[in-house]
Structure formats: structure tokens, C-alpha cells
Length: 377
Image (cartoon, rainbow, N blue to C red; front, side, top):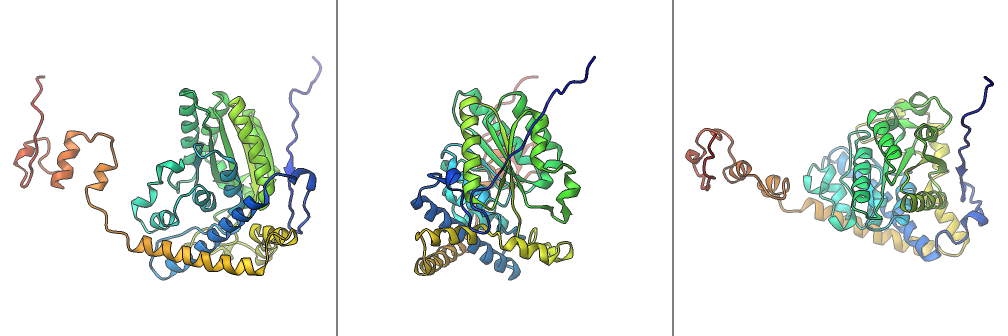
């Protein structure tokens, strides 16, 4: 039998506003209105300042380990800008900017890293899941949320974020396989920042692009400049439209870079060349956007000064709210676990004891519990 080609593919790379300020007028025309662009820029600056303050909080012993977002603000922000308010945003831990756009308060992020579980209770109207620290697990959550929406006949979709290292996890492949084979409307976005802590991308993936991994699952896939807000919006708008109208998942590889350490427990100087970091600083999404806005007469030094002063006040207020929050009641552990708390856990909650339960719980000192009648065997 003759040899024939059974599949060919091409993966596009999208860039609209490059690091040198060149703007593709054709692709970028009307993509983001000027008023929205200013607001998006302000959110990136707020996220960057929170990073700076959070770093100091950790170094002064006022907060636990913290992963800075600086350098990667554009990807999650562009996604949140495109998504509907009732779509699910399922993040890992470098998507603060997208969460802020959806209305999640800054103190929620601070509380999480301060070890306060209330930082994981994302306000329900914002349809954002708690920050996921285990690598790759959130992709399964996103697939499940979108699957549930499909089952209910809703047009709600899910978008999930993860790093390049997460694409080596089994959870990633399971989520991709489920979404592709069952037509689940999920947008998978890999923030490829080149490093999985200290492991370089070339070891994580031998293919030229991470985006190629989606081809095996029959997904539409694309790569974009993850530091270009316009390119992110362009790619997400296309992916979200497809998910909402066809129910099919898709994959976006946002090529970006973390300008700081992996977390405050890391020292990236041990494994990254400073020349590499310096080169990526020139591609900073905030500087890039500010240069563009200034050239278009949308921004100036006076507006920048006013913004910095406002952001400093907002972040300081968020820190105060996080540090002065009233201590949680011990019962909250139980009250937040079930919609209707089982009788045995009601007993544990009200007595704060577990010994003796299953023998004669009524004898526990201080217990005032109405026990259900014994059932026959």
C-alpha cells in the first residue's frame, strides 16, 4: 500500500504589540477600547505593587511563602477581560491580576499566604476557585466545572491556568483527554515562563512548543506572546467563542517569564543567567503597555503618579484588613464543610472532642446533644 499523510498541522504565534512598541493595526484595531485599556493597565500596576508589598511582608515574618506574579500579569488579566462574569476562572498561583479584575479582594490573596483558610473562600459571585498550589490538579477541577455546566444546559465555560511544568503531570493529560473526548468547553492556558522552579523548559518538553501537546488530543491550539495584553485578548476571544458555540476545548500557550524567584523560598540566581532575566525585563508587559498608551496620548506622568499613590493606599488598606481580621471561630471548620452537617460532626463541633464517640457520646463532659434514636440491625 502507498504511504500517505494522515495528519498535518501548523501552530500560529500571535503578537500584536511587541516589546519595541510596534503595534499591528490590523489585528489590534478595536480589540480593546481605550477606556478599558486604561483600567486594565491600572489593574496590572495594582497587582505589581501588591507583589512588592507581599515580598516585604514575607521577609519581615508577617506572611508565609509567597509566589510573585511580576512579569506574568497580562495572561490572566486578558482572559478575565474576555470571560463572562459567570464563567469559571480556575487558577494556580500566578493569576492575581485576573482575580482582581473579577473583583476578588486583595486581602483574600494575602490571607491565603498568611495561612488563613478564609483566603481560600473566594467570594461566590466571582466564580473563581481557590488558589491551587499542587501542580496541575486545578485542570481537572476546571474540566469538571465545565462538564457540570454542559450537563445543566448552561452556556457557562471554564478557563484554567497552569505552568509549563504542569504539562508533565498526569492530571494535565487526564483533564485534556476528558475535555477533548467528551466535548467539554474548557480553555486550557499554559503560562510558559520557561522554568518549572529550577527545571528549564527544554527538559520539560522536547517539542518546539508546549502548544503541540494539544494536537494529540485533537484540540485547536495556538501560541501567543504572553506579555502582550492585546495578543492574549485576541487568542482568548477566539477560544472562548469556540467553547461557547461548539462546546469544544482549546489550548493557548502564553509565552511569558517570571521576573522574580519561583517563590520567596527560592533563589533563582542559582540556576538562571542574569542576562536572561535582563532581556525579559525589557519585555515587561506593564512597561510595554504604558509605552503604547503614552504614545497614543492615553497616559502621562501625572496620571502615573496619581495611580501609584492610589495603588499604595489600596494595597496598604488590604494589608491592614488582612492583618486585623478577627480570629476565626473554631466551629467554622465544621460549618464550612457540609451544607448539612452530619450528627457525628455536630457532636465534634459542639464538644470539640472526639474521644468516646461511638461508645457513649452522651457521657462526654459538656455535651448537650440530642442523639438520634438507635436503629435496629
